[in-house]
Amino acid sequence: MGERTTSESRDGPEATLGRLIRAAGRRPAPPDQHYERTLEAALGSWQGAVRRRRVRQRVVGAAAGIAVLAAAAYLLLPQFAAPAGIAGVERVAGVVRARATEALPWSPLAVGTARIARGTEVQTLAGAGAALRLAAGASLRLAGSTRLVLSSATEVQLLAGRVYVDSGGVDAAAQVTVHSAGGSARDVGTQFELGYDPAVFEARLRVREGQVWLRRGAVERLVSSGEQLQAGPGGISGSTQIPRDDASWDWVQQLAVPPRVDGQPVAVLLHWAARETGRQLRYDSATAERHAATTRLRGDIGELAPLQVLDVMLATTDLAYTLAAGSIVIRVKNAPPESRPG
Amino acid sequence: MSAAVHLDHALARRLLAGDRAEFQALFDSYFPRLYRFALARLRGDADAAQEVVQSVFCKAFERLHTYRGEAALYTWFCQICRNELVDYCRVRAREPASIGLVEDEPAIRAVLESLQAAPGEQPETGAWQRDVQRLVQVALDALPAHYGEVLEWKYVDELPVKEIAARLEMGPKAAESLLTRARTAFHEAFLALCEGREMLTPPSGAG
Image (cartoon, rainbow over all chains, first blue to last red):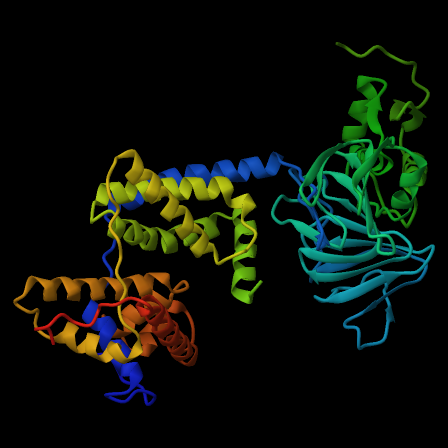
């Protein structure tokens, strides 16, 4: 027999509702075979939707906000551990500060900050920069004169300036959305930069890798690797080409965070350097490729730019590199060139 | 966007991200409610209801990336269900059943008394009682997740609050609080269903 709480009286409104529900009786359950048949069909449809979403790369521009959504499709470098909290600080250059709310004073933001709380506002002054690792796993880098709010582990409000998102190399478990007033960008496993200038209500999207749909209002454009578009009050315009290793991406490299490589094969470092510098990784021989896969590194790297890291770390190995036509070419030191099969 | 709809928007994103546990929880919550929704409008044709609801889930997942949180997610599914019902009936040249509504609050007690009364000898009285019973169940189906179940556990199964709390994996105080919210929500839903409809003053001879 059900109990009656002190809040109910025999004739009170709650008791009345209770008797009404009791009188109506239990809602009939669907037959098991109908449940199973529908579940099978729904499961297939849901899985299809998930697959389509993972290959669809969209940039959505809305009048009320810019959203940058990053989600990776594969795990490339397992040493990028997701930070605790909604974000961690991996690198800081110049003056970078944060505050929990508008009412509180600014505090310097330091590397190794174990946890950035939800709602924290982060600002870089002119000439400064910061590299954050979001809990979702993606890298979020702030150029100078940038202000944003970390709304949650997966949402960021860009108030002004530029952010760079690299969603490659992380688990495809969560998406990160960056909102700002100007346009929205959604990507899957790409590298791109979104900048917003509140003075002119204009956003600029540059895609370094992958493809992104840029939408503002009812207009939609596909932005491919190496392309740049503007989104402003007049609509989407200004398609120009920008090479993946163009000097304008250098600010991103200055904030690159080297992976932990102690005990890892050289190949891990090479893939990271190629990705950060926007270059292809090539080996001039099968021997060089074999060396890269089997030679283990010792020690870790400080805050150096990717090519400086290669200079330092490859000095301890039998490998060397040269830059050629958008590639990093790896060779064995002092070895004659050999032709590669196929 | 209300807090509840904001949660639904986040749920949709998790579904699209491939969260299998969320998919199963959503299916288990929505399927029986949508099934009963369709069943009532298909005059009890169970096979037709299954076919329609299957189509609803398939179309909803195909379009889930377009869900922007304009309404609660279940409401969004219901709208798809309404459209599917119209198409289903049109293709098969059959008339969907229409659902009547009951009177407003002052009539709840009269409705209750009539429900509790022995079914009248007149066929109209029995039909009226069945309509009201169905509306109670429709109101329960329209409530957010768990509310309908909690109210059935409490008033149909007469489970103590302690057991309800155990089923929901929460403390007794939290369960009591949930029950209070569920009662309020049911009251509002039932009143909303009752508004603007003449009937359902019991036909003469009932209660």
